[in-house]
Length: 170
Image (cartoon, rainbow, N blue to C red; front, side, top):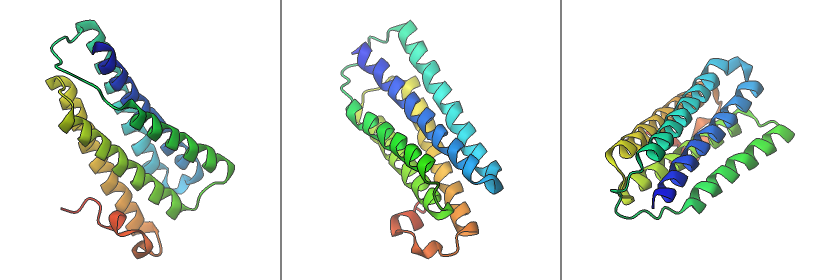
């Protein structure tokens, strides 16, 4: 059980690192929006560090009060692989701004759903649950920032799929 929690926290930290790498690449491709991409990159790096610290704290405390934990780490590994694939694709062929923004918002929505699912289905200790809730809030904030960027800089934001256009709305 302890090992599974350790693995889960490590996988979430890696997801945040990979997301940061994705934004760092877009920062390079779109220097005119460097502040936007650098902000997202930095926030993801910060959350990766928070999850790494949570993992280290977990190891030190050996939280034995967890009832049962069997997260499907294949889901997190699949998301990591998808981010890696997108980064590799972008390095070979830089994307248009619209494509980059669309991929960014889809990624943030996907990670937000994953973190929400973990927070609702896993019997987590309060500290770990607080960290997941913080990540969910950060993902919602990132979606809002990306949607603002889409509305400001894309010629035809109405061409984006409805789930992207309506993301972040109640």
